[in-house]
Length: 477
Ligand SMILES: *Cc1c(COP(=O)(O)O)cnc(C)c1O
Image (cartoon, rainbow, N blue to C red):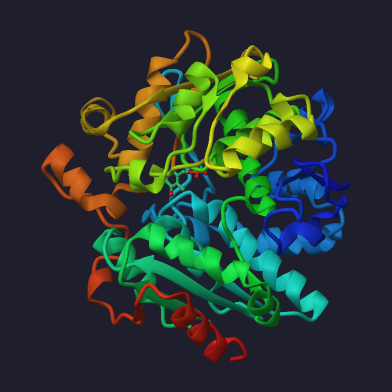
């Protein structure tokens, strides 16, 4: 199976060819040329599978140029209880992405028991093993450059630590992350992990990544790569838990399920869309935004208007503080009937810092065909929802998951199971939990003294040349 670009002007590629890259050369994002589809018979067999078997069944279709035996070995190494049960200290617990029943018809999909206590581990850990495998095969190495405001950086570092032929250079802002998030990243002592702390804010970090990546000579010489949220393998790996959760909350494949997803870059919910395209009986996908409501505005009005950095506010669900939803173009490619010329036209405006209005293109009705819903959750909603979940269900949820639960409940329909995706554990966001509940969240075993561990990082000015110098000094370690 081949992958094509949403902008229609790049050669078709295999899964392995796009694994290490980012954007397609024409500026678009890669998607399968046609979605593999699971038949009713396939789904009947899949209902009996555990997480690893499901992962292999789904990924064998999407990564069909990797020999199945190799893929199986990578999956078996990735999806283990040892990696995915950090958040569940009960020693006999061995499930990957379990579903917790809150009440009849309402469920929490636990995706945050991995090493960094956020859902990004679900895909990133696989990416680490896939990268190592592909680089070894090709006899190459890579220097991953990224910017983080919290969860992405730590998920990437925990996935890539100790991997052969991979080095990570992660830029983070001096202020802005929680102490827990800082300690998670900076306490890593692996020689291939480099934390570069910039005297600036997250946007400065992102600008430097762009500046370095735009220096094509430097990029080529030092084999600069990325693991950001547009990486196709991450999206592909995220489809697995939609299948797993569907089977967990239904008893037969003629039932449908709604999913509510705390969203920022549209990567997580994009995976839900793709699972549905592959035949998963999804009733509806619910997009939850925080105060940074680019996505909610689009699904309410048809206007997609990315915000400037100045218009992006810092909230108590910081991992959703995005100004533009980088995976959204994938969904729009399907929504336009895979009309690459239309996508080029729409993003012609977006790439100039503008907006588009789908109603003007006569395409807004299609949003209904794809059964999407959306809503917005603000700080006070978030706090109230954390309290509600604690009092009513005895479950402590993090601020992002609270946004998803709040918006999910607004769209709940009788007779349709509602699965709310848990995107982080409350331990990562202690201050917000104390504000909501007047008590600290529990720490998973082994993380009690995280902040007192020795830290390893380098502080730099907001200066692309300084960052390049560090990369150059370590690029051949
Ligand atoms: C990354 C992240 C999100 C947003 O996910 P997208 O795939 O970018 O939409 C939501 N919650 C948490 C805790 C995250 O780390």
